[in-house]
Amino acid sequence: MSRCIFPVIALNLGLMASVAIFASAPAAFAAIPPPDPKSSCANYEYSVEEKSNAGVPPSQIPEVVLGDVQNHLNTSTQLEMGRQVTVCIKGLYNWIYVQKNHASDLRLFIGGQILTSVAPSSLAPPGQEYVDFMLQPNSTDSPDWKNWAAVVDSSRHSSDHTVTISVAQGTQVFKSSAVTSVPSYPNYWYYIAGAIVFLLAALVFLAAKTSLLRYTAGAGPTGAQDAPFSLGLVQMAFWFFIAVAAYVYICVSTLQIHIPMGSVLGLLGISATTGLAAVAVDSQKSSTDQRQRDSLATQQIALKSRIADLQSIPIVPGSLQEHELMEKSSRLAQVNALLSQQPAPTGTPTSKGFLPDILNDGDGISFHRFQIAVWTIVLGCVFVWGVYRNMSMPEFDASLLTLMGISAGTYVGFKFPETPKT
Image 1 (tube, helix red, strand yellow):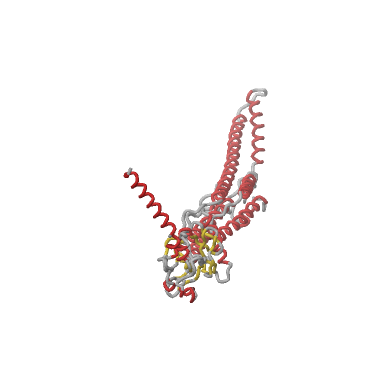
Image 2 (image 1 turned 90 degrees about the vertical axis):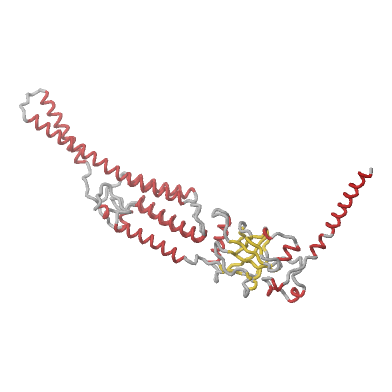
C-alpha cells in the first residue's frame, strides 16, 4: 500500500507546481524590463515621459519612424531591388517580448503595397528595435513583382519620388511617419539605354547596307543588297528588337534572369511564321513561273525542229507524215499562244524606299500590307508600355493574338496573286 501512495503524492505535487507556474506567467511577462530608449534606433522619437518610464506602454501599437540617422540606426531612406532594407520600429521591444508577437510575421509595406513574400532577414538586438528585410521576392511570377512594379510606378508619379514605408502583420499595417525614395530607374540605366540604342543602330545599319531585311526570289548576291525590303522580315526584326530590349530592362530592374515570357513567344512565333510563309510564297511563285516558261520553250524548240524535218521531205497527201505535220503545227500554235500569255520575266526589282517597299504589292499600296503594319505598331506600343509599367513581359489577351494571326494569314494569302515588283 505504501508503494502506491508515494507516486500519487508526487503526481499531486507536480500538478500543483505546474499550476503555480502558469498562474505566475503574466507576472513574469510583466516583469520583463522595458528597453533603454537611449539604445533604441527610435531614441529621438521617445517623449520625455516615455524615457523616464524606460519605454512605451506595453499595450501601445508599434510605430515606424525614421530613427537615429546620425548613428546609422535608421529606416532606409532609399530602396533598391536586391538590397537590404532596415525599418526602425518604436515600441518593437514591447510588441515582441511583452505582447508576445513574432517578428517573423512582419512583412514589408511600401507605398501602399504589402510584399507578402519579403520576410525579415534579421532582427536587431532587443534594445535597438529595428528589423532588416532583403528586398528580393521569391520569383518573377509571384504577386509581389506586380506590387513592386506598383511601388515604382507610384514613385515615378510622386513629386519627390518618395513613398511611405512601414511593416504589416497580416492585414494590420503599423502607423508610420517614415518615407523612403524609390529610384524610377536603376542607377546604371544609361548603360542599358546605351546598349539598347547600339542594338537599334546596328539593326538599322545592317538593314540599310546589307540584305538583312530584304528578299527577292532569284536575286543574286549583288542584287540582294538593293532588293526591296520584305514586310515579313521587317516584322520579325521589330519583335526581335522589342523582346530583347524588354528582357534586358526587366533583368536589370529586378535582378532576375528567369523572366516569364508572357505573350512574347506567341508574337515571335506569329512574326517568324509570317516571314517564313512570305518567303516561301515568293519563292514558289518565282519557281513555278520559271518552270512553266522553260517547259513551253522546250516544247516550242522540239516542235519547230520536227516541223522543219517533216517539211524537208516530200509529203504524200493523206499520208501519216501529212497528218503529223498538221498536228505538230497546231500544237506549235497553242504553245506560242501560251508563251505569249506568260508574264514576261522581269529583272531583279530594286528598292523604292522603306515605306513603299513594305506597303506596295506590285500594283500600289495594298490594304492587307497596311493592316498588318498598323497592328504590329499598335501591339508593339502596348507591349512597351506594359513592360515600363509592370516590369514584366505583358500577357496579351488570346483574342489579340488571334487578331494578329488573322492579319498575318491575310497578308500571306494575298501574296499569291500579287504582281511581281519591278
